[in-house]
Amino acid sequence: MGARVIACASSDDKLAFARAHGAHEVVNYDSEDLRAALKRIGGDHGIDVVFDPVGGPYSEPAVRSLAWQGRHLVVGFAAGEIPKLPLNLVLLKGCAILGVFWGSWVRRDKDEYKAAIDQLAHWCAEGKLSCHIQKVYPLAETPTALKALADRKVMGKLVVRV
Image (cartoon, helix red, strand yellow):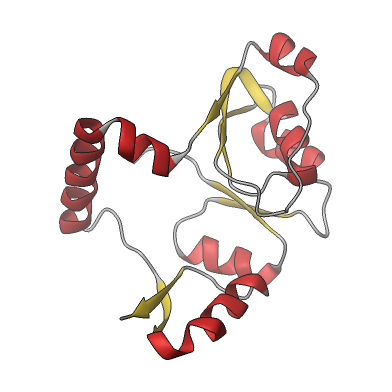
């Protein structure tokens, strides 16, 4: 869709998976300084958009990597810790930090949600999008599926079949 995708993860296996699914650049934030890596990749311009489902200690270096008037999308806090960002970074970058709360958006903006789902279905039908399903579990194995998620061993999606 025209974006240059930079995938950041905690293991080389996850990064190889991301690269195999279209990432142009990868950063292992367990073995490389995230701020330095994003600065190297973003160059003088910086990163235009950060999609951040992890939070924790990774949010501040991500905001620091933003280009002038970039956007940091706060999607979740998989790291467990809710970051506290120095607001002077927002001022200096002229950037936007935007909360992306899918569940609330679906309830509050049903027409936009329907249009977005229609567009996603269209892209899937055209082969522009796909979703990797790592494993399908029967309902009785839901605890096993949840443990795999908690152990951070999932690459892609898990499905629990009812």
